[in-house]
Length: 251
Length: 339
Image (tube, rainbow over all chains, first blue to last red; front, side, top):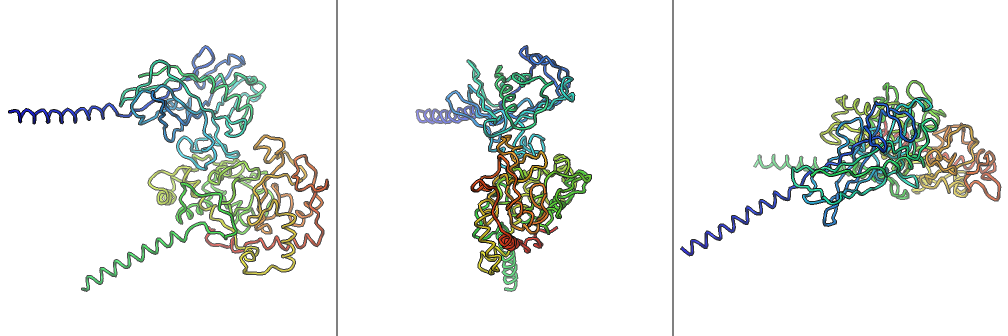
């Protein structure tokens, strides 16, 4: 009987070990993290949408966007233990004209708790000078300058009655020298960590304000077109990027 | 016994066939003389194959890449002129529209770090994006170009063979063209044969080489005959083309243009970024006594406060004799590069 008992114990132990192992595996399932960029207009954070007339709070000029898109790349998530998960090939075009493109999905993030997200606005210099790329970096996307190699990192176009020919076009880019546009930003989630665990929802909500492009720029009546890397491209993009803020996370 | 022999024969055939294939693969690649430096373009993920090269060659000669299917790369880059245009100053694109610069010759591009007269393009793979999309050249949106290729069963098939089972995208087009362009190696001129000890230069050609080395070679560096720098060579300013200054927005780069290779120079007239000089005599006269002072003029063109390169008529004749040794008739008639 004793012998039987010990056999039972051994079997139970083995069974427990196996099932608990299984449980651990389930807990360790990687999941997707979505970074959502919500677009607002001005410091009052009013509604921003294409093809509707907006008044710029600082310039006082009316403008109707027909295009608004920008690159986000090189996404990394910082875990509680200080280590990073770096998404391979992370290049996104956030395009106000393409629904869903404001959600950058990072697949297969290892399960765990994350405290920060780090990302680059624009495209790194390596990919600006490494020849033909694919995906979001495909030159057929219309965001690669043919005559002056490098990506247009922010593109804002539209109509403005005060502009010289009634329209505006800002193609902001430049990946080297003092006027390089791409910049890396890091955002801390505060007291609540982002939990990644299998199919569980994990969303990071960011707020971007295209009105900030003109935070330090002249009125459209004076300057309505800038389509090459230069100091203005640098200052407009910097003003826009600096005002992108972390809003909240969804766990 | 018979069965065994047949089997062995069969096996040997397969064996030799596969060996043959391996040999073909090995034979196909970028070859160049030992006095050339290592190529700048290393192909990277773009694996060079015979089929990829041939696909690039077909695309180079096919007007399908232009808006109205009238202009191909070869329209303005003719092999007989070392892939420069047919001796015209400014090339014509779709609808007979004219560009503002002279079509450059094309060879030894695997060694070239920057492209265009103003150096604005930083990689051989993205080079064709400019002529394909330029409204006065081929004038075609990249998406339309790719769609046209996908709709073409022959291209669809060939792209699949080279790049695998997926729809054609711009990277594949650029890869194929880069394979063709990189393989355009010009290294069989009389100068090359002289470098390889196969022929002697004539007295005039030899003297010309010495003059060249003393007075021209710091910019037109051997053996590629360019140092790929951007310089102002004292041309009279005829229009608002700022050259390199347009790229850097630095006024000290205004009116600087890329130093072109002098290989095949006798075959590629007219000369300069705008094709203003028709003959080599005009070019040599420009350097000896035609330079116009510009704040950005290259310091090498100003010696002891005198602008220009001192050259007498005798030296000019010998220089010309030497420059003619840079014509590569093997290159311009090589069937490997032809349609």
